[in-house]
Length: 100
Image 1 (cartoon, one colour):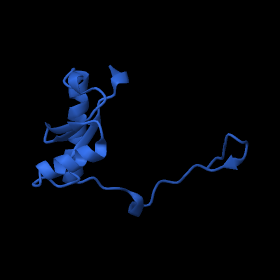
Image 2 (cartoon, one colour; image 1 turned 135 degrees about the horizontal axis):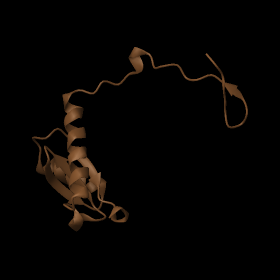
Image 3 (cartoon, helix red, strand yellow; image 1 turned 90 degrees about the horizontal axis):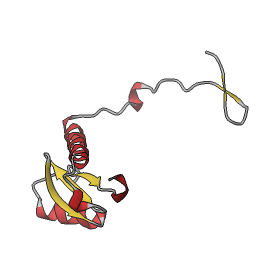
Image 4 (cartoon, helix red, strand yellow; image 1 turned 120 degrees about the vertical axis):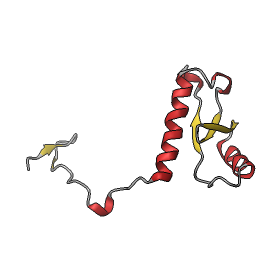
């Protein structure tokens, strides 16, 4: 294995690949959250959240479940309004006014 130079000039060796125990497995639950996050970003780029600038959007199954300016309050609200949804299932998306 060849050495590489770091920014301060010290010689270092590249990191080895992670051990099997260090690899994170993504199952169906997290795949669903990721799919909602991707969907929300696509919707944003298509102009769907123009009325939500500066707000957080909570999504489950490609459906907006709530919007709010404060993420902690939004999570509390959507968890109370949708008790049948696992508390960690909400995909959160911030609609940044600077990304128009």
